[in-house]
Each structure stands twice: as structure tokens, then as C-alpha cells.
Amino acid sequence: MAGQEGHADVVQAFVSAGADVDLLEHGGHSPLIMASQEGHTDVVQAFVSAGADVNLLEHGGHSPLIMASREGHTDVVQAFVSAGADVDLLEHGGHSPLIMASQEGHTDVVQAFVSAGADVNLLEHGGHSPLIMASQEGHTDVVQAFVSAGADVDLLEHGGHSPLIMASQEGHTDVVQAFVSAGADVDLLEHGGHSPLIMASQEGHTDVVQTFVSAGADVNLRGYRGSSSTAVQA
Image (cartoon, rainbow, N blue to C red; front, side, top):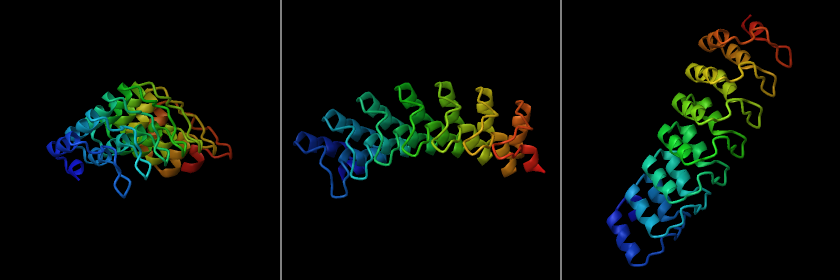
């Protein structure tokens, strides 16, 4: 409770008295998990200094770092990185801390992981990369951070979609422009046989279509089933 509420002095008192810093409550959460989720940096640092297990998963399969990443608590993430936490540790559902931060659009957290050497191309169990998650949600700043870090802009997830396909389908023009500037393959077909231009045309995203046309995308390119962007628009 003291950790969850952010009472650092109380936590220090318990630590000095020999309290078990890794003891899980009935719901399966450790004191460090609680403090991480709430963003209490001083409490987290107190637990780290006391030797708490920074990679301990709660019963739901989440690590303290994943909880902090999902909530966007950059200072807490930095504290874990400095303490040697595993930045690529997957929770039971198969998501990495970087995936969580990317999906939520926490650019500062993403940059902290990139600086710490996190694998920017690591796929979660469902087959999505951090870049694909950011692209789908339209988080342009996060996408730019990954591009600058050398992420594979043409990496396909298990379903066969590229980051550019995801952004095109959702109509995220700024994200599409970022990929075009980074040299992404504008004519790359996903496993179902659709190009980014076909996907944008199908969804009626005019600005995205114009971006592809300006980038030299093949407007006559046909998918595996014979579909083309011009046929869709017609």
C-alpha cells in the first residue's frame, strides 16, 4: 500500500525493518509493480536500492518495466534501465515494454528504450513489431524515433502487413510521409496481395493516395487477385 500510494519514507522504514520487497499480494502484484504502475519514481528507486527483483512478473505476467512503459512513466523506465532491467522481456501475453510504449504513443519512453539498446524489430507473440503498432495507431513521433534508430521499415508482421500498409489503411498521412522519406517500399504487397496504395484507395484516404502518387508509387500495380488502385477508385 505504501508503494502504491507513493510514500517513499514509509517504504524506506519497511525496508530498514527487513520487509520482503518481493512479496506478492493475493492479486499477484509486488510492491515494485504497484509503484511502477503509479509512476512513483522515488519509491521505485528505494525498492531497487533494497535489491527488489526488477524483472519479477506478477501473476498476470507483467513486469514492473512493462507496467511503467504502458503508463508512460519515463523517469521510472529510466530507473529500471539504470538498474539493469531486461528491456526486451516479454510478458505472458507476448508484449515487450517497447511494444507497450509504442502502442500508447509514449515517445520519450520509446527513446529511452532505443538508447538502452532495446530490439526495435522484436515481434510480440501476435507477430507485430513496435513500429507496426505505432504506425497503426498514427503515432508519428514514435515512428520517427524508430526510423532514426534504424528499424526495418519494410518488416512484415506475421499476418503479412508492413508498417506502411497499416498506416495507409488507417489514413495516417503524416506517418505515411515519414515512411516514404525513410525509403520504405511503396509498392510492397502484403500477403493478401494488396499494396499500400490499394489499401488507401479502398478506404478512401485521398491525402494518402496523393502522397503515394507524388512518391512515384505504381498506380497500375495489380494485387495478387487482380485489384488495382485505379480499379478501386472507379
